[in-house]
Length: 436
Image (cartoon, helix red, strand yellow):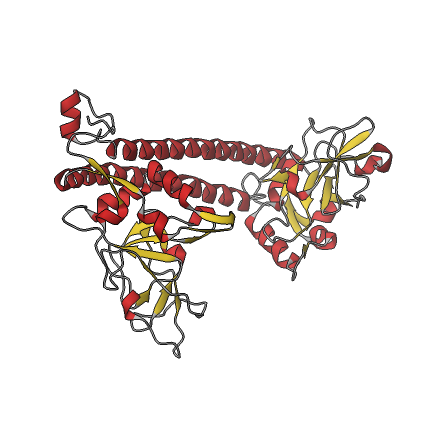
């Protein structure tokens, strides 16, 4: 171990000491950002300009480009090539400083003005090693400190700062061993993450199929009626800003808005409170009420719903919401799951579509068809879907935990690699056992 914390034969070098000049005689080459068509280049014969989204962390996606207009001449000098290392140099904080090695590409794709291209000297540095180092937590932290700008929505990574980045440099043979070890382990992590990410999607498809089978699982037949025959709709009330307050006070009622519920669950933060005298008994939420977002600037929000439980007390709802209060012939959970069927959500989204604000008319809600088997059968199906819903939520939480562990392991692997603790020679020197 040397005094600077690196293994013997390793050394720190700045990026500008490791790169070789490009055809334009510079270490970093920046592209151009002409006014392009919105659609991508249709073929290898038509020039396109890369979007920054073509560069993901460790992945190059050439399909993310914009077609260069025919009247603008292409610049072959900034055509991306296999072996280029690219990094985004401008954009929102999360999209500035993202690196990727070009392992394959199609012809006639130009760099944009928000992308740098560079290449390491192959006698001193393996390009794959440099890409993996740039993806490490330590390098990303250094790059984060290099960004300039007054807003997180628009930051820049200047060439001078980036070229001053410090890189731990082992001998080239050891770089290749490190790359081999990392690619083996990271490919397994990627495969595991891909599999894990697919599990909720598959389960969601089964859950959606269960929603679509409502009214036909227990009972093959059920009477078809409108939601208006199964429930009463109550429109939300508009409260003046002067009446709404952020803190609960004596003689106030909690006010729920569309932002206070998502995916069938209430979100307790960000609630407002209004004077109790302003809330009629009918406007108080009751157990079994189904609360719906009836107006929003987002079509994805309109139609979202939540069922009110016994624990929700002293609560009302605002102007952009509505309540379905089931009558005795309809089970609340059955009604809730029916309006969450994919076909009902699509129907409501279509009916609510607007230019700026999406509004779902209560008359359209009440006219929506629903199949009602017997009350006992409704309860049985509601319980079945409640159980499936709960299991899906539990599975999503497990997936998030597993993915977080994978991310932590990836970070640990990269940290070990660029401090010299991953290669077999280093492990043998210190008698360590690899635990990855």
